[in-house]
Length: 186
Image (cartoon, rainbow, N blue to C red; front, side, top):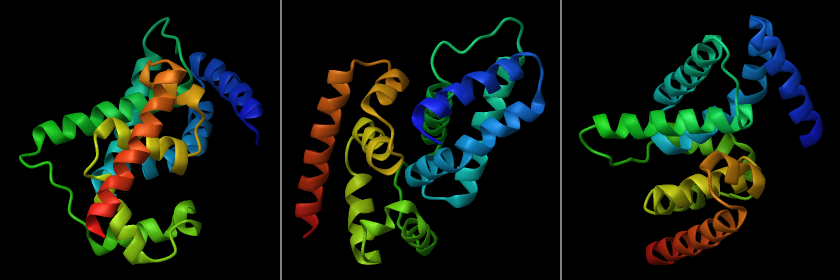
């Protein structure tokens, strides 16, 4: 399904959800759950926690949409990622340490994701993950959304409430920062 078809389908499903159709919300879940899980999983380094935060993101949006006369001003995907991002921030605020440790479970996860074609070995994946978690969170988000999830600059701009130019700058600076961290580890 192309981006235009996805947007049209999303709008159609949102109209059905607005009229109380739970199955339409289930279809939105099926479309976006894998991407959202991958995004959260890369940020929290725990499969169980990523599943919990993914579910919580969808639950919060469902509750939001059930409220009378609520409409989504941006895309469903943008609202979903904003919600997930806020939940991740809340999680780390509650957590006593914000250290993310590499574990075998994460290495296995990363090697199974679509990015595996670009990451030829677990060693390289480890280096990239270690570098990624050491750059600014804003850079992490845009790099994951752009390179891993394949979102466009326009979509990321809407999700982050920033201009497209600002997103391009963040991607550029994020890559530069990631390269610096990778060269420090080499």
